Length: 252
Image 1 (cartoon, one colour):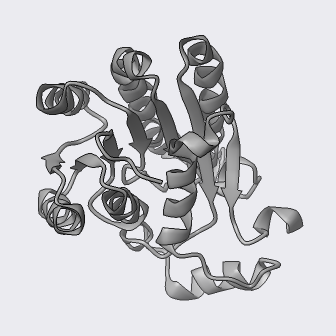
Image 2: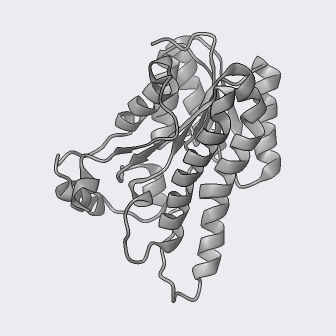
């Protein structure tokens, strides 16, 4: 499947799932706008993509929790390419746990929601006119935790459940204009995000051992599903949350 002459905007594109997704679209000849909080990493990601496809890959250093940065991402994309065909939300999301009695619960909750939920809602809102014009689509990276109930995970799990429901609501709103919205729900994957959050390799291995397939997920596994959902072969799919979890949800 080719994305030649298509414009794909990816947040969190400097590492992890976002970077793997950017590489996948570069291989399909897409023009890319890659945003990330870490300027050095997103610049390297853009350089890698440009070498793969010879199409444009524009890096943007941005904080998705800030409205002015989100507006700059959209404006830069439209000024450079004149359109947006696909928006992929894969920004470095906040993983903060906590139970209902924790003294710092509300601080963690507010910080988590501002990045994990509000940024996705606002960027979709800002990009919606361009997506309606292009009959484009949105793919959101959520988490299997949107469907799991675990102790000590209120901020993160609630934010992911909200993201998944936003996906359904936005899909219904935008369907009359021919715009699709879907989400992927990965099980834990070893990425920089997990490292920053203090997740250790042995924690990932415990998750792998609990999965029926006993398979350690790689970032490209998620990128492939994102790529499929963004393409014309998925033209009849919208409002769906797709797990990529090696069967983890089967035993929850």
